[in-house]
Image 1 (cartoon, rainbow, N blue to C red):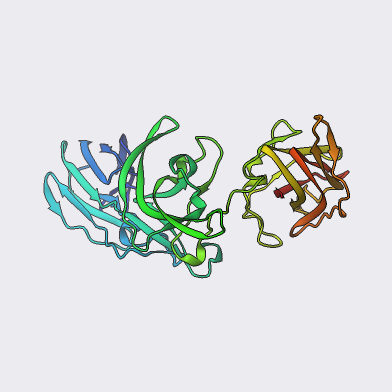
Image 2: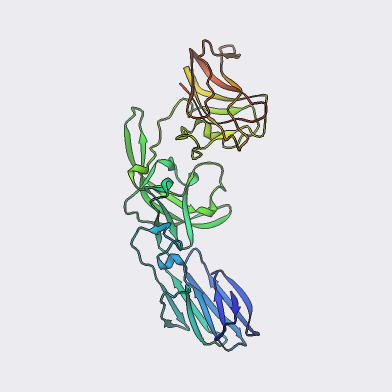
Length: 385
């Protein structure tokens, strides 16, 4: 809240709805206001005049853009649910007309006295938002807002691959509650479907309930998947891939801690040169020397092919393709041995680097990488079969 002196009536602007008490100077005179609200979890705001030495002034209450059907002040985003949210307001129980204004405020101009109470209600139904069609990455996708908050789907709340979820064409949302990092938050739940390939390679759809949390609250419950933009058109879906030998393996490395290590067997690969949408891991800032990543299988398996998608961010970054690499396997005596009769080990900066070799039956394999002398290296994905 802040006081302002214009050419005519002095004004007090309320731009942020938050429980607090403020002492202001309005035309050099003391005004004390207190605000009671649960915002942003609900849209009810009560403002009390605790002290007024300024007499008449204009109380200007901000009406957010989302309340006026504008996610942002441009055509970058638009609401798609045809809802029309509204605001209501009373002063000491008497209704005040609320209509949009050019400056985005509801103005109440009067002589205020101690104890006057303004109650503002903002509708806060969940809403669906689409991006401008030129935003290629968001085509066919929808994000969800409620009031001033954008929501997301995160792995701890959904016991399925959230990247395989498909929103209903006309989603309906129910409110819930959850605790994230010791703080109570309002959640949203909606019916959806997951698209998966079964063991026979057939695409299947299963009903599910998708839980969303406020976007600001993600990444407090361990590393894992999160998504803000959710597919609503079939063209934007990413069906969950069948489990693979790599995806079901335990992953260990020569390095105590590698960032986003789960990327190596998440079955997500870059779509082309310059694509950074797929997760990746790396050994940066290490240079030179030899590092490894290991898969321990649930049971002995026959392996004859290995494919790596290398991460390279040259010429600006510090990761290049490796100087060399090779595949090793754990033999029956517990010794690590190089695979026999391998093809040449390719190091393509774009696309799949695949090597075939004489089949081995083993419980574990290693990807051994020799880093460049003056750069590090990384990878998007490593598969074996």
